Image (cartoon, rainbow, N blue to C red; front, side):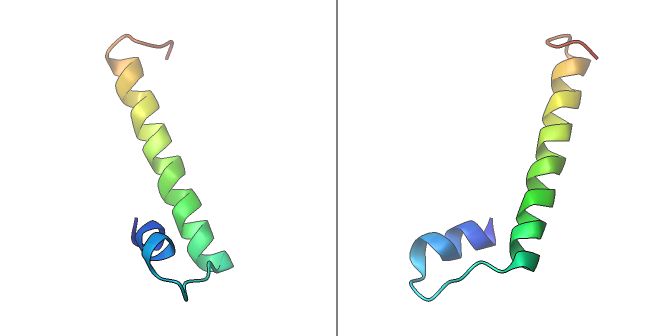
Amino acid sequence: MKYRHDADYTAEFAFTATGAGEEVQAAERFIAAARACLAAGGWTAP
């Protein structure tokens, strides 16, 4: 989230491959956790 905040509010901000990779990994972890939560609640197929 730090990168998103800095990108939105800091004119000098530039994404790096490392920073972007970290953000993608965080998003993938969130999606996996959300899928697991939905499956555990019976909202999706396991």
